[in-house]
Length: 364
Image 1 (tube, one colour):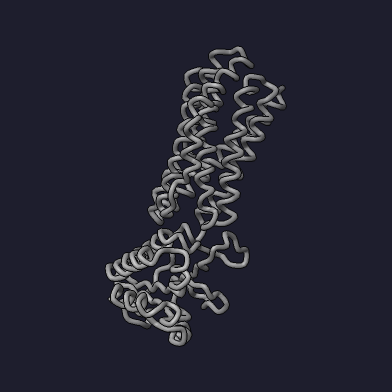
Image 2 (cartoon, rainbow, N blue to C red):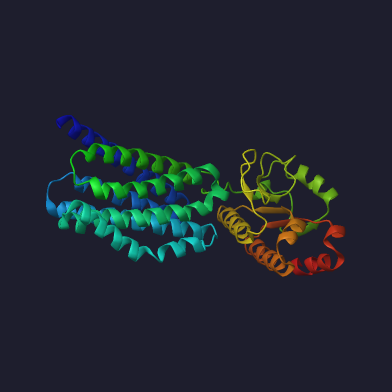
């Protein structure tokens, strides 16, 4: 038993170190880019650290506070996931809302099941209740983060899977946690999953997509601010002119993209291992959010951003013309406010005379 106790203590220390590392690193990321999701996730890891720390003491009051801290961890994790989707201009999926509907009944059945197995009313009302609530909130947070896989690829995929698994592993913890033999097993699973969650969350939040983009210095920008509508031939010329400028581009042709550009491949294919960033043509809100953040941060740094779009015809295939025009009007306003440049690569023959004229009128 002494050896098992030493294993539990060692794993508790590993979890607390991981929690503190996640808390401080993510807080530092928040101080750099001021994304509120980072601050909320940082607080989540603080409460997980607090839960482990308080559980180390034999005081009943501190143990109860440990259960409370665990639920706070799950609450901030869910809040952070929701805020993250908001910042990425993604909607909360309906499936996540529908899953919450039976939760009160599921939780009650869960409590009755735990009490039926353990026959311990105090354990059921404290530890088991805390683990159950935490598990449900954590699983929901994981399912929300699943919506960011198209943007953050494998980092988001592995993060949401590890979070969901952590939520599910709390169910046997509520049933068997009352037994001493389960302590090393439960702590080993918790340690493994928490370390994975920390690792994948740090990987996601350290990515270029989550961090601020590199600003463009005013002296580096060789074209004037405003809106430009150009053809494919002129596009080839201007690509050479801007080859050393960190342009934000939304494009269809990814065969010859300057290395300095940060580009998104606009495609309906959800995953592409060869291309770093992809975005669906129906996600106009995501394109707007990425462009706005890029222009705002560049303007704050005293530079001038350049947004290039070589996918207007493709957007019109998957969206109503009115939606595309409203999207472009909003993007133009962002360009004007931040003194940036918007370059629209358009083939007037494929676009049609009416839409081409409307586009010219819209962007001025």
